[in-house]
Length: 167
Length: 107
Image (cartoon, rainbow over all chains, first blue to last red; front, side):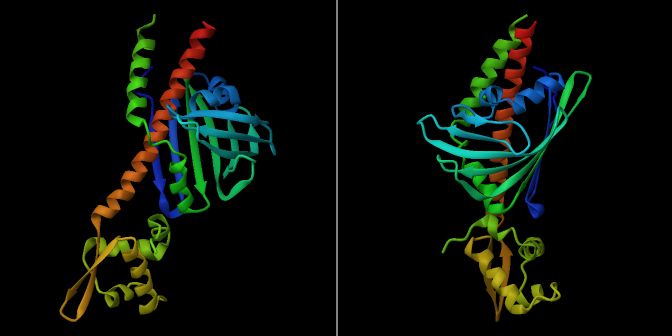
């Protein structure tokens, strides 16, 4: 893995918005798939040791993904993503809300806007997250990812080293 | 009642108050002079909310009460943002690994 891939993360609290930009060493269609296909999403969106479980996903305008972040102890935090706009393979927008296990949303939620572009085999993803309240922004953290961060990063370093040693 | 710190800084007037008292301790009257359309009472209410989440502290100087910023508390807010950033770092590193795995399989 190239270590000089761009990662930019800024938060503008005054407009309750988070701006994230990240480059990936892969072609745009593959990165698009990784963000829009449940079987791929579930493999990366939950910071280990948490895992992601998609109950159902229908990636079309008006469709939704109902999924949970699952803690190592088996605690499930459910959320619903509703797709409001899809332009393959350059942009999609969705509304995200926490939910209970019976798929009842807890409002307010947040608006997510993803933009994809590719240059010289590097795909750049821009994510804009607009929260309906700052309190909710704080809750995004409470999805429970704080535990095990250092462990995760160590595991990951090992994994990346292993991968990069392969021919 | 313990107030939510992010709720406290969500208000534009309160953020302006924080910006002003970050530079120097100020009295409610001096602060109110900066906000046209905000009464002294309104400014006091904002200060009370900021004090409830320990973002400001009061010091008595003679007959005047001065408000100043609790820098450590503001740092907590930054640390929260740092944690949030780390989540994304972790997530994206996992995606890097996944993308590499898929690309290797295609070869």
